[in-house]
Image 1: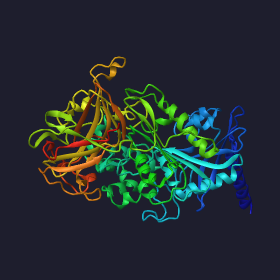
Image 2: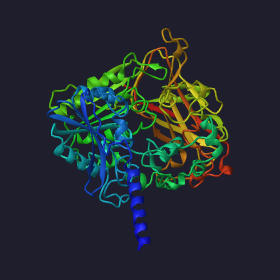
Image 3: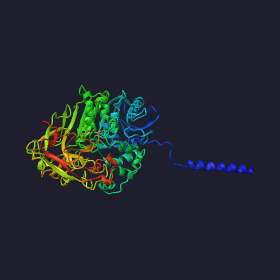
Image 4: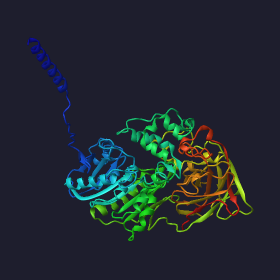
Length: 630
């Protein structure tokens, strides 16, 4: 009995000790941020979805707001940090940065709402990269980003008493994909959608592939985005130069194995679907939106030098515009920007200066009145198409895109010539040797990892192409000095007639504006070779993007593909240049130049040199169909 009593006392003492240890803290149970000097109220809530999962949402309401519209962004990048880019009591200052058109939001008196998408940061549930829509063979569930957006809007208009019940959704990149899925069975309160630089088709020309060539420098993004909820597991680099790191690994599949990427289901799917099969086609948002009614006004925003998602905005515009009988539902804006630069100061891109802050001009003259019109009922004077014309550095108001309604052939000629007339004489070719052991770098080395510090990544599409022109494995074709301007407004189309001694090949084609040797007032641009539009095509897909086939060696074959849209004037005194090459490394994976079933897993012995020949005279002379405008 005494033993039991002592044991009981000891147990009570232990419990008391534990309780004391647990309660010894100076932190409140639920701290509340207080900032009496702020001009907005910050609220974080978890909004329930139809399946019971909650999505973490940050709401910034201007003090004194009444009858205010809501501007929503759904993001995988962190709602808390994205609404506190600066720890400030002023709303515009707090928002300035990704992904906020901070001045438009603050000056317009909007209620700003940013939400973590399902499975990221503060939101519950499972994360799936660009989750396929309900009804797709790739989604066995009853939820997707479209249903989550619908449920979120429903909650917002029922619970935010300061709002007028009207919601707009906007965002850049992945955040720009979300305004597209919001158009699928949209909530009645959704009055406008602004997808900026959206992810649309990961295979045709956005983040993951361009015409079948894999953008392997994005492997780091796949790991960090999917491996953890909050992107807290880093991808480590073992080389100072990414050129060396990817070359040392050999194939993208081998580099993925070295980094444990084969644990990630997203990566497994990508490597299992290297061709444009049903996996990619079912998810392409332009294809999806072409099949559904257009119920919400939309403004698609494209950057003319978008280094990440240059394909998507114009592809969706082509899909939706036929539904816009009144030319008042589908709008397009294109500026001289890198990916997302429209929300920043944008007076230049790399070495190229625009004579104005193009981002600020567009936000105040296009975005702000567009949002106010559909969310507040004010009048607007926004053209169906607003596009910046490089070369003259002027904004244009157009009724449709492309502005050029016909094309003019620009012919590749013998001995590096280029012109608007065919070459005289019999069939002729120009050739080079493509060696996968020494691929052409997409930028000057050393190649840094993808990042937004500095402009090594953001401005690479405007980088001087003289470095590539000096290589023996890059063919260069140059026109005479222009005696009159040449204006293009649309997507140039490549018509390449070429042969290879291998059984597979990549073709990179660049359309370039060559500046005069000396440029007074801007001397750094003397002789500059500015890429106006360029892209890559994987030869195995010449007969069908979903049908990889062996290329017949030493047979001249035709390859046709579009370059990204351009709106540019080649000025009098400049020259036009075209470059052709067969690698763009390490941004794009190397083609072994020997046909293998899956290039992701090519072996070291598969990579071989090849002699590449381009037809520059004769009935099948190679050319670029330029969208020449008046």
